[in-house]
Image (cartoon, rainbow, N blue to C red):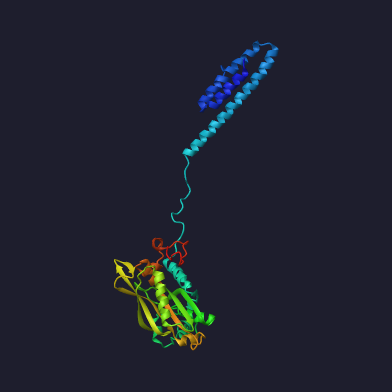
Length: 359
Ligand code: DAH
């Protein structure tokens, strides 16, 4: 009897068994009551004691080995069956991620970044001032004394003063012009700054909101003229609107803080609520400007006999509407997520001149 051959036969059969029932068949064939190994065991009784001793031990080893192989295979088949079942019964209970995990940059913030890039290229740095401003900075220093009619035109929000405190109340700044005074007082002349930011007026209709945005510009040096002003504004508009055709109209105007003064309109069309720049027969006023009044320089400690220059104030919301074809000003401030997704900008595209402002 060749046990090695027997061993090989059953170990191979165990390995080949693909499921529990064929494994059971192998077990019965080897170790069942009528199994091959069991029948061999039964023949031991007829052997001589020496033969029985050696064959008995060898058979026991073989029996144990096949039994172990059967158990291991059975466990393996059970594990595989469980894995199969787990796979087929798997359920995804995780929450799907939001389709757009990143927020967007508001068009007004985008435009502030764009105009900062344009003016930086022309040597202007960014200046800031407070939104709650003293009436001296907001009015007096800008040559708007208390009885000046321009004060009434500004629809000012006044801050509260304590009972018995009769100093003039602070105001929510009605324009970014007070930053001119702060910047000149702090840095002196020559100076070249812009000051973008929020301003407030008590006004609310289709084209006015109580809070809106302006960017102030100020350029003071020894021989700055109206011609420099015109060039800077035209250059700014060309770069900003990113279209070949931009048509500006300079109109003589009046502001207490500039002399002479000019307002600038830009040509646009409105077809079915779609705003287009550089075409059509409509004009939108986008900025006020002029040569800084000597009294304004004086108020900021700059000698008007030595220094002169220009200033301008641009309505940021308006140029944003024009550039990006946004028909309603009020939608800027509603915080409607659908609107922000439509008109918003990617946070990772910082505007710069060489790369294009609004990619
Ligand atoms: N501050 C003016 C306003 O809010 C705008 C303005 C006009 C600013 C002329 C200027 C300027 O700097 O020179 O209506």
